[in-house]
Amino acid sequence: AAMADQNTFLTISGTQRQLILRIRPEDLADEIRERVRSGELSGVDFSPEEETKVADYPRRMNFKVADRVYPASLVNLPCPVETHRTSDRVQFHKSADIGQMLIVYEDEGERAKAEAETK
Image (cartoon, rainbow, N blue to C red; front, side, top):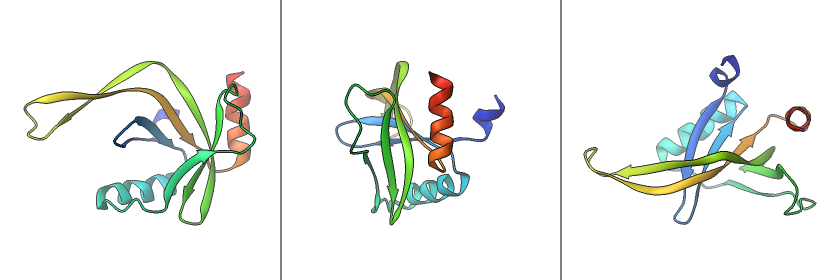
């Protein structure tokens, strides 16, 4: 429980897919949270590391913010999480089933430690 209190959980969405974004560095989480509030997400992106193969698990990713690159892992959730949208806070409709989470780490050592704990 203590670990969950130290992490920030955000849901990002696009037109085609959604995932849960878990950002471990607090200063980066604060920056991304502010960018989401202001709608200014240019320069924020993630992509697979070049040496990652489809069969690799967890998938090693790079999370990019402006000119900074953070190590990340794309993991599958144990079960789908249903998300909903509303325009009036009265009627809700299902928007997606989320099946993956992108975990962003401070540095490569933190990611390696987390990967070793899951094996």
